[in-house]
Each structure stands twice: as C-alpha cells, then as structure tokens.
Image (cartoon, rainbow, N blue to C red; front, side, top):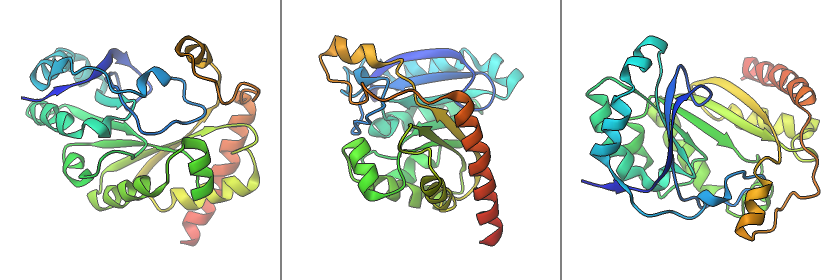
Amino acid sequence: MKKGAVASIETFGLVDGPGIRTVVFLSGCKLRCKYCHNPEMWIRGKENITSEELAKRIIRNKPYFKRNSGGVTFSGGEPLLQSNFIIEVAKILKKENIHIALDTSGVGNGNYQEILKYIDLVILDIKFTTKEGYLALTSQPIDESLKFIEELNKSGKKVWLRQVVVPGLMDNEKYLQQLADTCLTVKNVERIEFLPYHKLGSEKYEKLGIPYPYKDKEEMDKTKCQELYQHFMEIYNRKKIQQ
C-alpha cells in the first residue's frame, strides 16, 4: 500500500470541478511560476497518509457528492508527481462511483496514460503559449506539458482549461490570439476560465525567505479580466469554426 505526501484536504470545495468537492492538495512541484501563491507547496513533504486512509476520508463525503454531482479533485502542488499514489486511491474510489478530477499543469514524471484511465475531468493550467515565455515564467521547458497534452488528447477525457492573466503578459491581442491557437490543440474542452493575477500569496514568500518575483507588478483588474475573457472567447470560437 502506497503512502502520499498530502499537504491539506479541503471539504466542500466549489471551484475545482463540478458540484461540491473534496480537494486533496499534494505537495511537490517542478515549476516555479512567478505568480505562484503557494510556494510552500514546491517541496514535497513527508508521506503522511496511505491510499486506503485517504480513500476512506473521501468516501465519507459521498452523500454530498451524490446530491450535487460532485466528487474529489486532486490538486497541488503538482499531483502528477504522485501519480502512483493517486492511482491506488482512484481504484478504490471508482468502486464507489466517485467522480475524479485532476487539477494539473501537466508537468509530472511521465506515464500519463495510466493515471488518465482513472480520471473523469482534467483541469489543465495553461502557463504560457510560447517556449520562451513558458520557460521565463515557470523556470522549466514547455516540453513536458506538451507530452501530457498529447496523452490527454488520446485519452478522450473531458477538459477544463485555466489561464492566469498577468498584466503586461497576457492582456494583449497577440497573446490572446496565441492562447486561442493553444487551446484549440486540446480536445474535449468543456470550459475555459481566466483567473486574474493577485498578490494574496506574497506574504508567504517573506516568511519563507524567498524573493517575490512580481513584487512591483500590479494585480489584474477583475473587470478588465472579464472583458479580456469575452474578447478571447470571440477569437476562440471564430478560430474553432474555421478549423
């Protein structure tokens, strides 16, 4: 029986997939996104729970899942770095017909085909559209994310896409056009979301003694972010028709 490094478990989550959800945050992440608001999750913690123990905790909430078409979402950090652990948990949950979502950047250790067998919904974070921009933003090459998207497309799983919108980076016509092209490379997309950049996690950097990369950058105005989203969807839908 495998053990996992779980940082926290949130019950009654409402934004990480459909319905009321139990959200399991697994520690560890290869990326160092400049806007990350959970730097304490970068380093993988101690293995502190078995797959059976975690499954039992999730199953307790099954009555709420049934009433609201909810389920469990594995998030992080980067849950793909603990894919074998998630697979063991998922095998138990599938016997209970529990909906399973994976909130990921697509940067794990490979073997994505196996874990995707047990996932009903993938919530995929789009970091940046170009190789240069992705590397500058995350400190890692884009290649692993592209490998994951390739396997995701083969799997036929449902997908939600998310884009954090940072002023000066994503709030321009050129980027929106590129983002639409990127999103169109992903199959079975049910939803695309824009998340306005904020500084709510900046104090964590100070406590950890880490310089905050976007110290001088302004937060993204929510109204402007929504306007950008509406314009983006016009671009996306137009390109989709032209495909």
